[in-house]
Image (cartoon, rainbow, N blue to C red; front, top):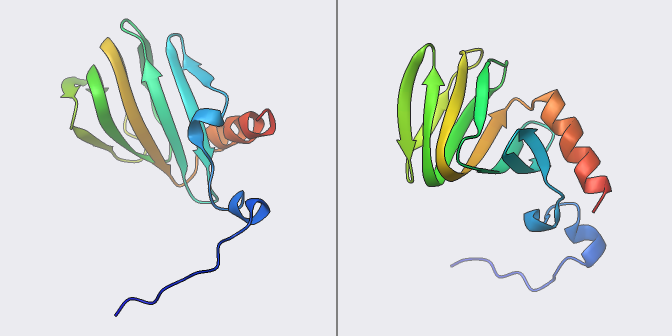
Length: 131
């Protein structure tokens, strides 16, 4: 039998564990690509909406990246080759692999970075301060 909990955390305690991501101001990560960033101690999550025609230049970072395509179509450049990714696809980008992307239609993704990327964690902290 499952244990039942009846005590709710108060609003101050809730802020330690829960953030309503639409309330987080967006950060422009590339021209036409806007993200709500949420950072924990060990990972960063980017809830990203990209306009058709947006482009992410090829880059690499220490963090492993897992991208979940929620809607749209992006051609992801991975290690010098193109990989089309559509709604329902999950991309697994290992640490330090060169990657980028051409956004072909408005696309929404969730990116998870682990370990945390310092540049995105700093942007996430700044955005939360503006809430």
